[in-house]
Image (tube, rainbow, N blue to C red; front, side, top):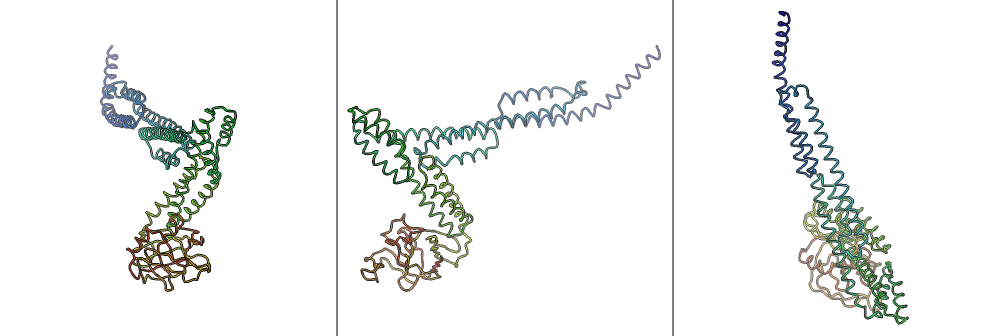
Length: 457
């Protein structure tokens, strides 16, 4: 009995010593786990704020709360792997976040594909820059790094898609309204012939216009009303009108893009050669384009070149190696003029220089005479291939003896300036440098006597 009592006393003493020794360790472990628990809780709060579905976040939070209910002095605490459970919860939270982000991005990509397909299919009904915005939306999705950000882009894209769909419906309704020929099928056939001729001259697809026109003629020949055939042809004419309109807008946009690309080349900005190659490729594609989808692809290329060339010009405006002060530089190969002040490009314009056999001379010259207005009188007699009628202009600035001027040319359309214009003999100069009237008015006021003029190939 005495030995048994001593055994119990010894065992109790050992347990007491163990508790005394382990208590500080358990307390320190509890403090460390509290910090880990707070970190996991903050992670869950952040993920929930950034868009993690509430059901997933709440489930993880409930599991975390179970871990937190165990006190450091509890026997279950001493024998449980609290740190391992917290690490597992953290890994699960990160995994749920990544899975949700991947799923949301997939939904967003599906929406973007629907948008791209809709725009491509209805390009003829859309005005710029809608057909070229798919890349912009794709870039927005790439920049979105959280669930909330991706959801926000999706919401904006969905709204834009609704707007685009409304735009298409409005354009279709407008086209249908413009073909008010239900009671005059003969006039409808006449319009079909005119639009078909325009489309063919522009190398565009004529869609179903010839077939629907033939069906309407057959109906009229059989003394039928042709109502159904009139509706079908009207719809096709609306599509064809939109196609022709898109082609015309691309021709106009090409002129603006060419001016930017030539300016970038004249200023030798970074990537100017690449922009020129892309522009030339777009023009080949425009010539070959026949369908609305093909025209939309050309439009996307032109938009990209236009934005890139403009950005390059903006970032490279100053720092050019030029004659100090004000100076004018002219590229004959690009048919481009750039006005510099202290190495900074202030303005640029396409030009038309001397025609074959009367090319504009190269070299460095200076403005020594300015007059407004001025009248050009041909030094060549009538019958000479170089003779021209008396031609009044508004402003001239002479840079070389013998009648070499920079001047406006009221007889030349603004759209005709630029590369190749020097070879169009009815409008090309006799050695002078012709520039659009609006630019010439500015240049005349900006240019002091003695301003250097550098002309190079």
